[in-house]
Image (cartoon, rainbow, N blue to C red; front, side):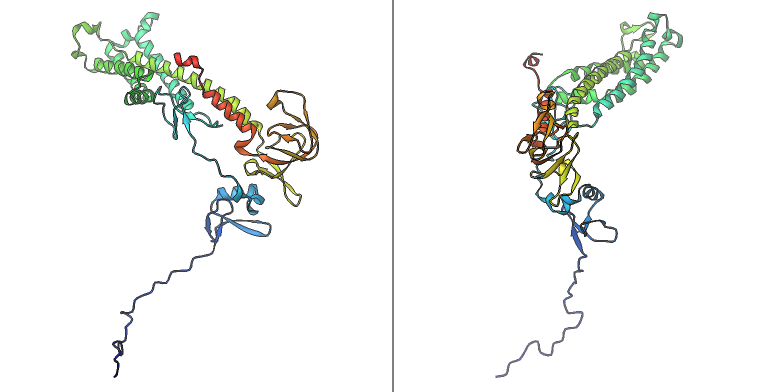
Length: 387
């Protein structure tokens, strides 16, 4: 019995054949030794040579880190580093430490600006901003006081230029202060209402806002007021009171922020005790200065005379005297030899030491002291709860 092939004699044309899309072959790639990203190799790819091998980078930042410590990244040691921290910076209220937020803002209880919990060398943006607003408010407050109270010191400026003109001039001087300089006060006052936690910003916002709005109506719509409200040539205004209040509050805020800034100097001084680099000894005996953040437990480090001990560790070779006054307050140096423990930020006096890194980063004694001082700065005495 013959079998008939149904496809026999059937020829597919090019139009009928399914098209197969060819996937272009990917170009050569390499792994960035710093961040671990895959880098496409192109003529303009950032490249560094070390130990007869080429390393490629995804960005200039990674290349700069590699240049600072090529052995650390080329040897693969970076892959074993503890990546415990860059936890997000948290912010807390200096008056209410129980308030902790992941982003800057204002305290929902007292309205003060939150500050970072971790000490920083960066200047306070709030202090810079409030200082500028304070000087501008003070510059506007002086002519306003002269316009309204000049006659008390034999300067009847209001009589010279006329009541209405003086009112318009007061409006021009006060408006930018109320609508721009005092804007942080109104924001904090509004937040206190939303949080149902009235505080001093609530009072300041109500007082300044009421004085400005009343004066605005008195200047441009004096006819809406009864005759009893008229004083001499027109209805009295309170532009100067609103601006003076704003200026004085800024003075208090700036003084407080400067005081807090000075208390942070002690923390910054502690941070400055630690060296920025450590002299690492490689397995082949060569030495070089490596960034302190790249030092890992077990690294062998050279501490030369006059240098600060970079991390907590144990003496492996050499003998010397260490100044531990930053830790104990004792001015007499302490002799150290093989097997003795050393503390980071203490000063090596005379001999050369080889130490093995034991505790690094946030585990060092210095880091714990900084953390304790920072926590103490934010803590409140029990008596303050009665204030």
